[in-house]
Amino acid sequence: MSRRIAIFGAGAIGGLLGAKLALAGVDVTVVARGPHLAAMRARGLTLISGGERHVVPVRAVEDPAEAGVQDYVIVTLKAHSLPAAAPAIARLMGPESALVTGINGIPYWYFHGLDGPLSGRHVESVDPDGVVWRTLPPAQVIGAVVYPAAEVVEPGVIEHTYGDRFSLGEPDGSRSERGQILSQLLVQAGFKAPLRPGIRDEIWVKLWGNLAFNPLSALTGSTLDRLGTRPDLRAVARTMMLEGQAVGEAVGAKFSIDVEKRIDGAAEVGAHKTSMLQDLERGRPMEIDALLGAIVELGRLTEVATPACDLILALVRERARLAGCY
Image: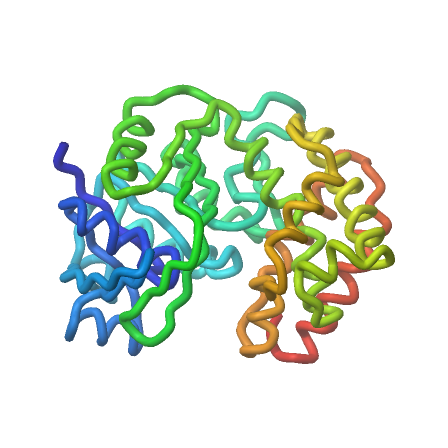
């Protein structure tokens, strides 16, 4: 099953995918830049996982044109980076290529093929003016929900800390041949990669915690255990999540667990700093609009009130502006 796969944005998650796919014998190209790219070109990609250290030779490029057209392009950027990167990603795509979006939050293609009055609408918070929609046609997309945690501990070195599941799903819920082939390739590489008929529901369940815990952690500096167990903080998170659930249900999502279990699951992760808090501390752009701005936008579109989310969104945007992270 020879397929060409490019990983665009081969940081922590992209590097993990690239290394494990290459170890499984898949034809992989990673698109990266800066010291990380230079290290991979000079020494290969090092993966530390499960107590083992693998050094994997990978084809690493900065210009996607060097890689040529791919069967699958897996994008593992932060959501706010996608509009600027879309023209470069398009250089890896032919008419038969599949674009796999392993990006947090509401994806730009959310309303593609979704029945209802919002069908075919772009999400302004994550795709201003619909630029990504026009550049990367949603018909070529396979949705993905990313569960592993990994970190670039130094240029060219990825440490995988936990998780091995990448859920996949066609926006129309079909069991497509392209989806099944990608699932098989990921399974061969050591991942769990179920092809889900309701990928949007799974996107919402992951987002459900992120829409509250990420901005609250950035505003307070608190870790997941405190946000999920201190009664006052838990109450704020619960209020935001219930608003988010109402928005999700208004656009057709189904929530398979209740809010208390979802909060408990986050608290059990322990003294973990969310990605948004880590980005704030490191002076990097924060994923505010994909995780919370889009919820407020969809609330407006569906006439669902989101007062707590509105309040926290205003505060976390200002926190990010003042830190130069928005």
